[in-house]
Length: 212
Image (cartoon, rainbow, N blue to C red; front, side, top):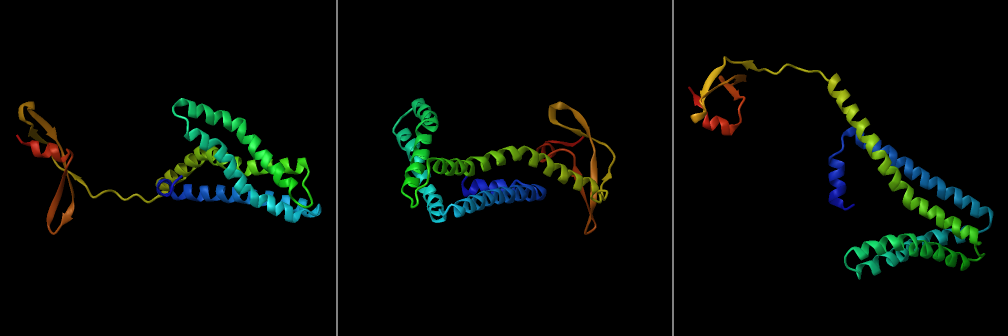
């Protein structure tokens, strides 16, 4: 999502919607922080705190390499074959690259990480990457419904003042060969002693119509 799309998304939200999205994002962020703190305590107890920090820092370059395995070959393929390759690589080469790089990085740590520890970090990293977008997608519909219900509720409870409009007698206007049609005007208040008259027809119709 680029900057303009994000700004458009924010501008399209109501105030209740923005508050609900803020709560969801804070909950997701809190979940990620809780997961990382839990992992850190576990590896502290095993004497692998420094290795865990390095594994988490190396996750970014490993993600870039895994994405390159998918994107770079696909750019050299034209047509629907490129999409087919992306789907194939997403379920074959990408997992091999992601888990293989974690296994290699864990083997280079001191003390070395076991296979289960390497794969556990790979799975938790995938969870951090995949679960938040899924949750945001699932929350979009309910947040939209709740925010608009709250907004409509606010409108219903707002004080409503009658509009200062006065209906004038019905007049008959002639519209060229179409003949005469009845129309009603309303007086919309006074300004400097002159009554503003708002016709129910649009400006184009006003230009064509004249009193019969």
